[in-house]
Length: 99
Image (cartoon, rainbow, N blue to C red; front, side, top):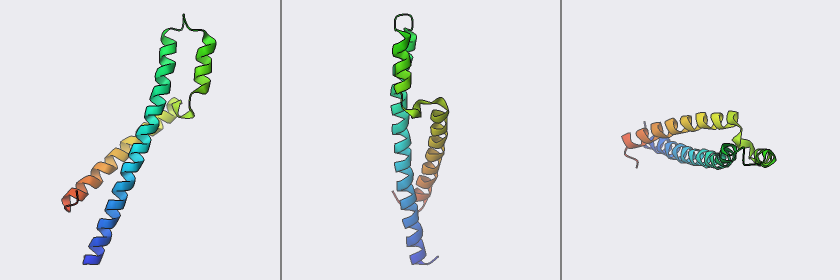
């Protein structure tokens, strides 16, 4: 592989790794937002006898769409894939002496 080809490969690796880190951070942030909202709903459900059902319904209706369990599961699977990709890219970077 020529020096130019090596430089291009290193550039692609650095770019892929940077994009993977950003994607992972975005997923983690979205999951934390969903977690806070689901935690609030969970707290209300724990005291359902004390809390009026209408306030729980309102909280559920106002929850972000990312709180749907199917969406949370999909984001978790995507996060797992992003973590695996980032780990692989980091190993490759370490093998060639980057970072």
